[in-house]
Amino acid sequence: EAQVTQNPRYLITVTGKKLTVTCSQNMNHEYMSWYRQDPGLGLRQIYYSMNVEVTDKGDVPEGYKVSRKEKRNFPLILESPSPNQTSLYFCASRFVREGGTDTQYFGPGTRLTVL
Amino acid sequence: SQQGEEDPQALSIQEGENATMNCSYKTSINNLQWYRQNSGRGLVHLILIRSNEREKHSGRLRVTLDTSKKSSSLLITASRAADTASYFCATRKAGAQKLVFGQGTRLTINP
Image (cartoon, rainbow over all chains, first blue to last red; front, side, top):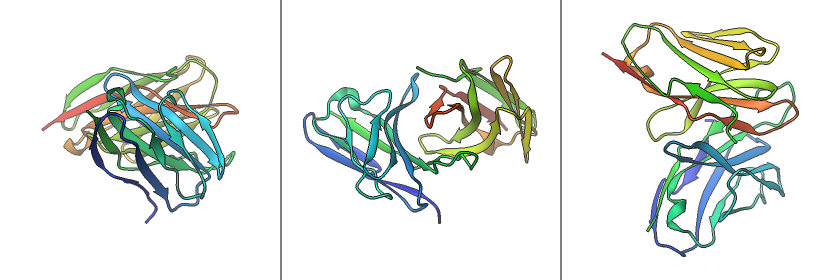
């Protein structure tokens, strides 16, 4: 089954304790992206990756890091989480192909609470 | 900055009625997509319309695109309780890879 998986699904942590949210896709997609969703603000892109070892900042990258060492994985790293990073996080992936399908597949979400 | 803006922010209708949601955007686009999100879950792609298309159908969904007005509408016909969800439009600018999402319309179908 084609899917994007995220782990953990729920996480409560404390300020300053480094954490990683994993994302994996099994569709051989080149493009992967992280979003955060907050009430009244919609989905905002944090980081994206066009392919292995190619990453770039989205609209709200401060306080986050990513890596793309393998095509299927795109972990989101919070080196020193703060309460304003409490949010619902989504990983997504799709092909990079002009004229091809643009359908973006989303993971189930990770609800993060930073105390 | 947000490219797409949905209208209305919330919509409540009776089961069986049609639901219409609108999306406006600011710049030239390659395509516009609609996604559905059930509460707290991941977004699911519904339909894509390219900039050279004016209307597209998929089951009970009908999407229109007016590039001169920079707007799109999503019509859900014969609504069902299971259609209760948030609906987002997303635009991809010409020459860009990024999808920009609006803030969504919260649709409630009352039985």
